[in-house]
Image (tube, rainbow over all chains, first blue to last red; front, side):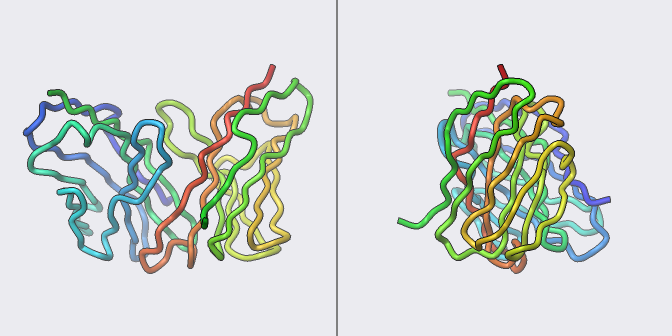
Length: 107
Length: 115
């Protein structure tokens, strides 16, 4: 079965602390993985994609095929990072999402 | 101004009635998707379409129907058979069905309430 799992519903950290949002996937093919973010009162938007191996707003994510994971990391969280984060997988033309993790960065 | 537009923003329906949610995109994207967003459950895929006149069921298609007569339009009908239709509905589109890292663009959503 194709599935994306984000085990944490809520992650609360203090400003300046490291952040790791977990994402595990289940897919027998070659995965294409993404992180999307939804800031308050804004549309869901792309944060980063594994194929680009990019760093956006200080966030990075590495695909680990052995552990079937695509965790999102940032070394120093900022208050403006507070948002809802979704991990996504595109198996064969579908686009499926995890349950989402709400990140709250406190001052 | 390119983008994806959902209408209406809020919709009220009486029990037993069908209702159609609109989704239009002018991005020339091939693939379009409908999701239902409930608290704590993330985005669950209802239907998706990779090409005109073709669509596939997602994980929670029961009680919903779609059509894809034009590339830019992918309306969703919530039928009276949907047992718990009150929810927030999101439409999205991508080039290439999301392959090769193609970014998905989202509408602002429609909040449907059954009264």
